[in-house]
Amino acid sequence: MGNVISNQIKKEELMRGDHIYTWRHGYVYAHHGIYVNDGNVIHFTPAAGQEIGTGTVLDRYIFSSSPSRRPVSPCPTCGDRPRSDGVISSCLECFLSGGKLYRFQYGVSPGFFLAQVRGTCTFARSDSHEDVILRAEILLGNGFGNYNLFKNNCEDFAIYCKTGYLLLRNVGIGRSGQAASLAAAASALASSPVRLMPTSGLAVVGWGFYCANQFFSDIGVRRDVMKIPAERLVSRDRLISV
Image (cartoon, rainbow, N blue to C red):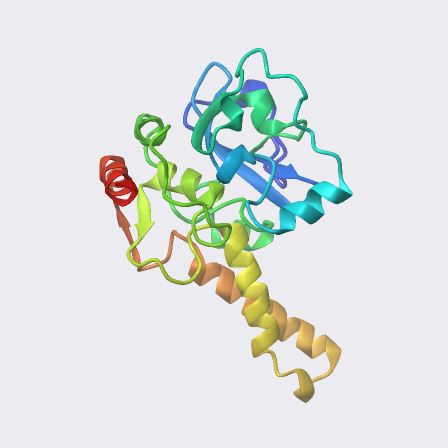
């Protein structure tokens, strides 16, 4: 079995419909996708197919300080497909780009949730692998809206495929655990009474705010979500692009 604490698994443990991820550039951020079968992964990338980037100005600093792991020649399995933008299909090796393989956890307990790092699990329960793969395949090539690191990213896409949940309103932070953790950390710092307590007390209060924000921003407990068929997303994106 894989490492329970880190969610790391072996390739032989992969199952159809798994929400998988791999850390990029150390543990700066993770890239997420849906494992389909036969070594294929469907995932959401920012503009220009930057599947090892964040789609923001941060990329110029990330790539300037560390070499890209994108192969010089096209992958013999994928060809040029990973260079496309939006929702793409690529082989597992291109998806991992040299990183380790992890499986996102669904239906976890509160204790497990709070013990995990950002963007690695949720209280929400996954739908059947048939529904998960169907959503991913419907959105393949049709898009998932405009990529946004904080509101609509690769983790949001994978969570949608697993649960069918979308936010009812496009404000604030999206479903992404990574984005929610950043917001939680910022909120903890802003809300902590810095001048009124010693450092030890500040750390405890700050951690409490962080955990509370993480908990209530999780897709499994939020009230502002609804199950939306993937066909409706495709129709919406086509209308927007006209």
